[in-house]
Each structure stands twice: as C-alpha cells, then as structure tokens.
Length: 353
Image (tube, rainbow, N blue to C red):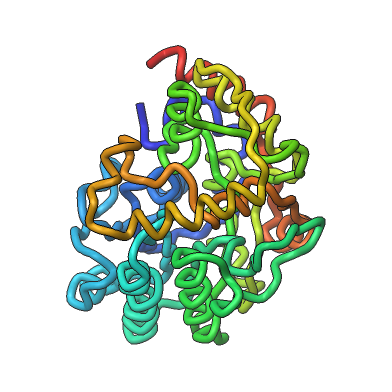
C-alpha cells in the first residue's frame, strides 16, 4: 500500500494528461514522508522528472533521492536545493494545538530558510503549499476566492504561522523566481491521518459530536485530487505566479452530512450527539489552554490532539466553500475523483484493513 493509501492504482485517470504538460525537471519536494508530499513525488517521478526530497525520515518513495533533515536546518536545506530548478514546499507543522514558537520555527522561519536558499541556488519555480485558514477570521466563507493571507486575523497558531509563511514565499516572487501558493482545503481520503482517520477513530469511540444543525456547507479536497492540483501547479507556475489559489473538489456539502459519511465509510456509526456552536467554542478555548500545560493530557485522546479547540469549533460550525473558477483556469485542471467516488474508495480502504 503506497503513501496515498488504497486508491493509488485506481486514481491515475487524470495523471497522464498532467504528465504530458511537464518538461523534465529537477524537483525538490519537502515533507515527502506525508501523504501529499509522497504522492506528488511519485507522480513527478512517473512523469520523468528527477525528484529529491527533504524530511526528517525516509520518504519511502522509490526513485527519489532523500535528504534527511528539517527545513529549520540551513545546512540540510542548502544541500537539498543544490542543483534543482523547482521546489514544492509541503513540509509544515500541522496541528490544532501547540506552542506558537514551535509552529513559528517550522512554518515561518523554515519557509524563510528554504526560500532564501532556493533563490541563492538558482531555483526558478517555487510551489508553496499553504492553507485557506490563512485568510479566515472566524466567519463563514461563501463562494469567495482566495483572500489575502493575514497573520493578524488568522485563528490559532497554525493558521497565523502558515499565513506568515505564505507571505514570505509570495513576497519573494519575481520573473526569475516564480512563486505560486496553493491552499488545499480539508484534504481527506485513504491513508490520511490528519483528518480522515481522526474522524473515524473518534466516531468509533463515541467522541465526535455534531456542532449545531450540521447544515453549514463546506468544501473539501480528496487526496488524489490534491496531488493532481500540485503537479498541475508545477507546470502552471511558468505562466502564472505571485498569487494564491484555494483548491477544493468544488462540491460543497453540509458538514454534518460529510462527517457522518466519512465516519460510516470507516465502519463507525454516524455521530448523533449535538452541541451548540457557542458552547463548543467556549469549551474548545478552555481545552486549548489546558492542553498547553505539562499535564500529559495528550494521552487521553490517543493521537495527542485535544478533542476540541476554539479553532476546530469554528471550522466545524461555519460555512467554508470557495469559488474555484480562478483555480481551474490557472492550473488547467479539474478534480478527477468526486466526493461520492472518494467515499466509496474510502470504504474499500477501511474494509481491507
């Protein structure tokens, strides 16, 4: 089973077209031990590109040259960018809680180190993986495009530091160093441990409530579609750069319905307990503060993450869906796996485990 999970061999329907658009390039992918970075690395290799990866443990990507290290280590970064012409920066500290300084070190200073080293090494293309949370101030997003990243308004240390990191990357954009930022929104699918498996495991344990009516529309992104979009960006950045694009499936669905469908695909019962959004935000804020104390609370959930935070409560109780016309125009790409097909593949994945 590959890093993309069960669906790797099933999802290549759109890949050949994307591969034909790519010239032979020497590409560095950071964070290739994760599901997105590994998928992008494999797809680029299949297209005939040379791929180097940078992360703290082996990527497991056959044919890629691994450089083991962190984006926070200038020496490792300098070695990784030497001789490449394209960088896809996926590596990040991703969590709903944690100390701001830890997020800052990776998402801000790590990005700065990578951008500076890439420019010195003569890299000409830089695809930066960001997040829609960089432009979210807590209210609903209904049919909007990619608003400007704003670390002052973004909610929580992850969003704030990703916003600052995106600004660093885009500020470096020029004709000689073309930067394109992609903001995948709520990526899910087989093999995803950040969102998908947490929904399934918490639903199985009876610890997954529905906030409010669950009727707020949210747009998400299936894993293979995310890989395709990033590969498309490696080509598109030659022509369009200096901006950010939100990437989704373009299929908004009520958040309560979608969470229930993911849970059931994983063999769990659909959540039935309801909590008011206002109460959830208040409780989430308290839990978030308690989680920062050295009390060992991470053992209570099994994955080290708090059961609820203010940021998470806002994400689960407000609408988040985006206008995808600019994204598809720039990338010359459309998702090849629908939500319903993705759910079917997710059910097959969990049934086979």
